Image (tube, rainbow, N blue to C red; front, side, top):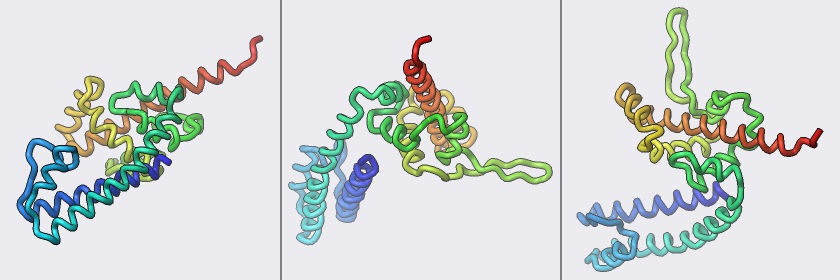
Length: 215
């Protein structure tokens, strides 16, 4: 359900981008607000567009409105699934991690005990750099992009917010100055996953302790 929801959102984003492209070709740009809010829709309706362009924009808006129905239904269902889940509650204490992001982490990772360390989990998620070694030197390349693409994607999305938080801002700025913003954002995603690992392992240990019969 999570993957289906995000695929629908991606499709909606493609449609929005198409609307923006049509408007840009005609020299229209709404400053100070989006095109898809209530006022934005009124602005779109007021534009004097060529017949073909009006048809394209109206058709795209119609499909976007149709997509919103299953997206809203999925959001409601997924929020209900997350309600009262201690793992979701723990993960949403992390900067940039909301309910849906927490659910993706939980469902993609599965049983946290199958990973002996946070580094193993980061490697499985494809967030660790590749290493090329010769007799004299070791070079770290780009991230491996192996493992769960969904987990890697949602963590990088969460990092866009987390990198501005007090917990990560200094680290992000330092890495960005040395190696660039994309690599710094990936580093924050990896740190988020490391913190998620420790939260989930602590929660699992607590649950196992509660299940043990008293002596």
